[in-house]
Image (tube, rainbow, N blue to C red; front, side):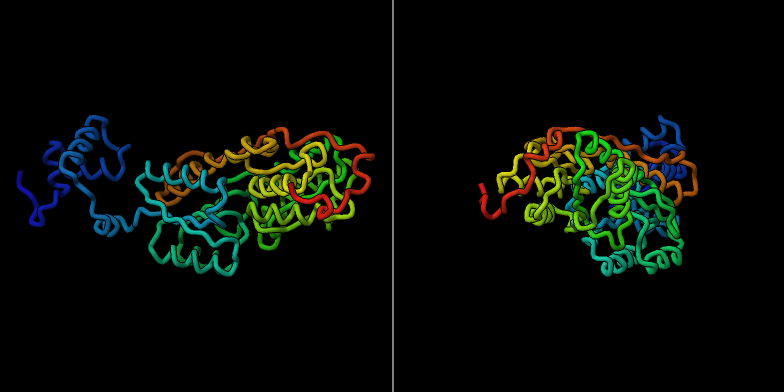
Length: 357
């Protein structure tokens, strides 16, 4: 079989070996759904036999697309985000797109620079987490006329489309489960609420559920810390030093809750006998902690899949189906127990006196 001057197989070589037209070979590689299964099979076999690799630059020039998508996450340390990214990438591959991922580690001033860097690479669309971003970010994406999908929230954004769930309702439902166990003194551990509508919605969900039961979420019992295991440890250290301790601590992520569980264990606080702890996300480790963590399950993988489909539909101006609001599920595990009696929680001894175990 004749080869190209470079010695590398060409699309013409693929078409010749597959015994199809050049146009059919091209369609089979760019949009497999438009060709017959037999044609697709012959082209695929020819590609594998020849070791053909498409010329990305030529493809981009011809289609005016790079077939790449950018995604900027607050952090890559959260397993919930990792699950979503995995599903996002797998789905994009199925449509012939590559994923470029970056994070800003919850530094608002850094997000614009990260987004600009990705946009300048020539991506065809962008995925961000949450709807609250610096106006510069929205202006940049709008100016470039880039399709934008905002995840993890259902709030109306200034620009773009959302794929997510109700953070407020998820926190509300989990709080009702905590209240059903007799808890009235509830603390919340969350990330910074500034520039983060998801954190604010989760706190408001808990406050609203408590208000419906005639209770008030104390502002001094809302503890903001970095959304990490270390942040959970620091938050619990602060809570254990309080003159009056809450009987339940609701953490806005499972990673925070894991840190809080660890700190309780270090100070001899028995969970849930002396204090209940809940998380949020239902990451894989949530069921493996001691005790297993009560939490709210968020369909993170489904969010990645639907985000990819929504973005590709916007890029290619085609209907890939409606994107429904995602549902959540309260997961009751052993870290949530009945509220201790008043007698058992009159005034806790100083944590430093109890010592670490």
